[in-house]
Every structure is written in C-alpha cells, then in structure tokens.
Image (cartoon, rainbow, N blue to C red; front, side):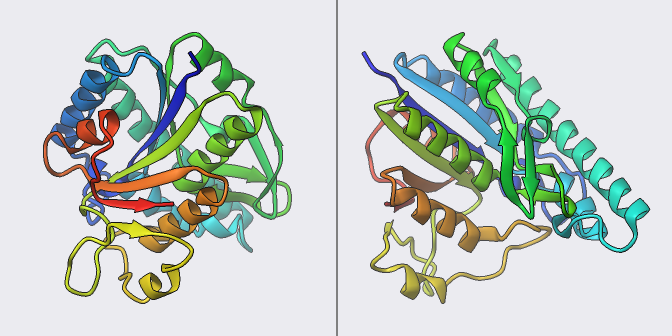
Length: 269
C-alpha cells in the first residue's frame, strides 16, 4: 500500500509566548506531543514530518540583527546575528524533540541550515537524501524555519512554511506518496473574517477578498505571519497539496485533524 505524508507545523505562537523573548509554552508542547503520539498509532501507512515555528526564540534576534536581509553593511554584526539566531532555533528544536522523545517516538532533528545554500534567497544547492532515509527507516523528522547560508546576501531566512512546502513539493515530484497534506497549528481556530468567524475554505477564487481581512501578527514575527502562510498554501494547492489551519489551544483538535476527514479550521485548496 502506498503511503501518505502529513507535514505538521507547530507554530511559534503555540510553542512560545511570541511577546516574551524565549518563553516556551512547555505544557502546551507536551500536550501536542501526546496528540501526535496518540495519532501516530492510528496512522500505520502515514509518514509524519514536524516543522516548528520559532516564535520568540528565533524571531527576536532575527529582527534585532536584520537576519532576513543578510549580513548588511555591518558584516561582523550580521554574522553574529546569523549565528545567534541559528543557535536559538536549535534550542527550541531541542525542546520539541525532547517532548516527543518522552513518548518514545523515534524523532530526529533535521535542519535545513546544514543542507541548503541559496543565492538571493533562491535555492541553488540542497540534498534531502538524509531526510528520505530517515523516513524510509521509520523515523519522524523534526525540522524548522531556519537561517540559510546565501552566496550573495551572506544569509537569509526560510520560514517554516517555505521549508515544509519545499519538502512537500520534493516528494510530490518523486511520487513517493499517494497523498500529501500540511496542517498548520497555531493559536487561532483558522483564518478569521471581520466578525471573527472562521473562514472554512480559501481558494484562488476568494483569496483577494480574504487578503483585506488579515491583521498583523501579534508579537515577534519576521517571516510574514498569517498572509504568508496563506500565500504559501495557495501555491502548494496549485500542485494538489491541501493545507489546513487549526488551533492547538483546545485539547484533541490536532489529533482529530490528523486522523479524520472532519472539517476543522480553514482548508486551503
């Protein structure tokens, strides 16, 4: 039987308090880890990849040092900003891995910072051979939005959405899986309209009317917030990869999204 692939983004807003630098929501992380563990037992023909948003860990130094735009005019400061941001991404990644290991899930860290090179933010060199082998071996990779080495800028940032999208398209092209979908887990129950009601579906047909309803992201975020998530998801939808935006605030919602076809949150297709 051909397998399916689910990519889960645990957003920075759910893993951390984005308004407080390096504040982990540990109890939230532990609960979500248990939901992933419980779900995995009911998904024998599904591979799972987890991508962490970096919240108030990676976004704080990235904003301070302008890491999204490279080294800048002050090369020494820019290089330090890259190093510091990468280090804090690693710290949060370790927290996520630890939480999943506590349930004896065979999770392994996989960082794009060690495999990808860009030129003016576009990939010029990358290998997913290790990631492919992890999945073939029955391991569960945990990746993240990351600071990438760039031949022109010195460095740049790939958001978790971009990282997961890149992975999804890679496996789509290789026809490894019968079905690929992405679940984004954050604070809000989906994309909300002006009356704070959930927009159940977003497609190419209604995206422009949705754009005006998106508000600024609370706290630290250098990678684009909700609209960036929608744009990345709509591009994937053109290739047949569906995305879903749900809240992780309520117990059981992630597990339900993983194991059922019940409409939850916002579907982007």
